[in-house]
Image (cartoon, rainbow, N blue to C red; front, side, top):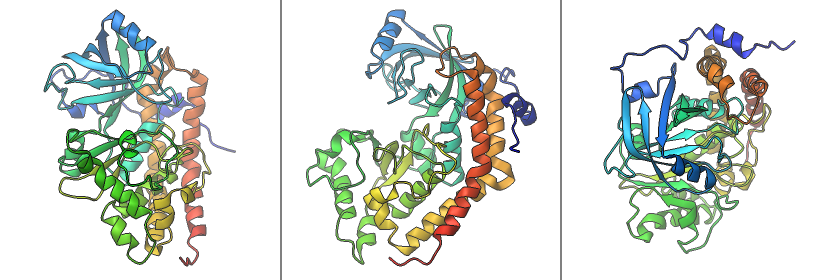
Length: 405
């Protein structure tokens, strides 16, 4: 019989600090904001007319002025706007916070901006956080994240995930430099790295530059077009060298392996083409790499194939024809499974996060799901942690048959 635990029992088992624990007023650092054992409290104060406009036009990216209060820090005159794709909602809006939108040079704990994810697509409110932790555990750069009760004009709007923006401070912290070209990918159509031709125009709307925005178009997007051209070039003995000069193929394969371990259905091998990533080209280099973003669609199934839709992606399918890269892919899947099993790490993290957010999640007046849905989805995550690693390990073993390109 399957062992089941209620969320409340899991919370008691975790034995962590309750969300209401008082912290010293002097402890006001970015590490405190992203403290994993604390449910933060964020208060936004917005002109009532502006808030009504934001709700009425929640599908737009219009900024409105607001103040943010955290502990005894008040950040005045920041910009807020609706954010998200399928998660946009007027009742519990996902929010983008830009601290220097109206006050040039202003930061909050060193951050120029951050996102408040409304978690309405995920009844457990944990997919994003747990998936990012798995990526970090596997050595990939990730945003720091924590949870908060969010109040807008003193009205409780529910549990949100605080997400560090992918920007210069993030790049410096994770990669040691920020002089390069950072692109945010925007889904426009089902794209799998097929060639889009010699023009730069097709790349401009789908890869928005977040740095060096005033540089010549050829400097910004030219290396991206060249990268895609080489990916689709002749598949010969020097294909790897040509392509790897423009995108780190080993990092790409590792990234896809982590996604597919997580049963991510809206990533590089997503349902409708590639989605939810940043592309970064370091300063002084032409070699791009992927940066992970938005994992709300992870943990979709216990038995999702480790090769789900991978044949559709030009770069990945060609990489899998190279024995060393196929081995890297399978090795990474195996490492993911073994890592989350070690010391029951994933199940423990589910319990620990539940200890922090469950009471506030039950009280969340604007979530789209019931408390019973929350409990069921948290239980599903416990089941996933118990079943998925074993399934992946068996799938990897089955795939390790002798391979001939």
